[in-house]
Image (cartoon, rainbow, N blue to C red; front, side, top):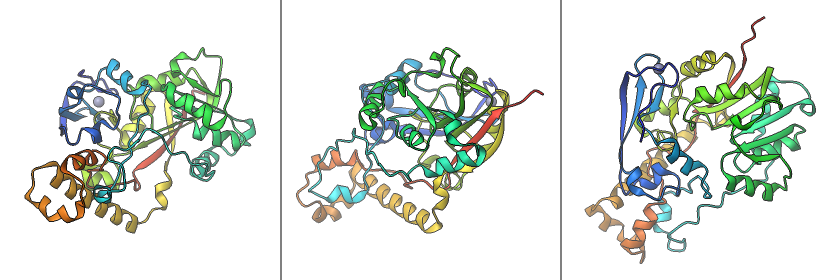
Length: 354
Ligand SMILES: [Zn+2]
């Protein structure tokens, strides 16, 4: 673990926001990856702080660069396959999920909302635009962008996901590359840069914004999707917000800290757009809260030696306590499950000096 300064202002004075106690039972949840073999690295107290000077919220101390590399460039794939409480009692399901295969949807409308946002800010014909997806994962969005006419490429740090994408979509050559933004020579320039769920994961948002300058020109539009602590779900759940995860999310922006971060790196914020969860209504939110509460209830009962467990024995139908323990690892233990008006696309371009 390393102690860090505020990435936005360099400040070293922080207010403690949340202490997250990670133990054997919720290890899987906070780790959210199966890549760190040493459990002792993850268990214990983790802290999320807020800079006293500029209000940026971030994980501190956090994993070292080497440990983070282990997470992101491992041959294994990041991601979880969370189940709700019904999974605990269904004997037909396997105890240990083979959660490493990412489901891939071929639904071309899946990311339509992203293209809608891009075309709102960039009404040009997509065939004239060079697009790069930073942190492209298996390249699903890159593939969609190609189908939408963009001249698109994607980069990612996981060799596993790049290989998977090449195979899945038949993408050849340099379309998907396992590399970092810093590895570009400076000869390739893009009109559109997208970073979907990337900036909250990187050690230094400042560094990535600086590196972007290698691959952009003065009219390039940058679209960065991340969760915001100005959202209703953060205000409702705070420490129990489903994005509070010190092993994965190193920075937690508000609209204001994101604006400051962009401006500090000579970008101006030209717009903020909600992701596709804007279509979801209050009934959806209520249902997801209820599901989360029920999950949490069962998680508590089964992760402790609770007498209440006896009540649910008839529903276990021959699933032994040992098997139950394994199943518990795949249960989403949060108070709220889902996404609701909490992710925003921050649209930015270089400040023009003319
Ligand atoms: Zn600061």
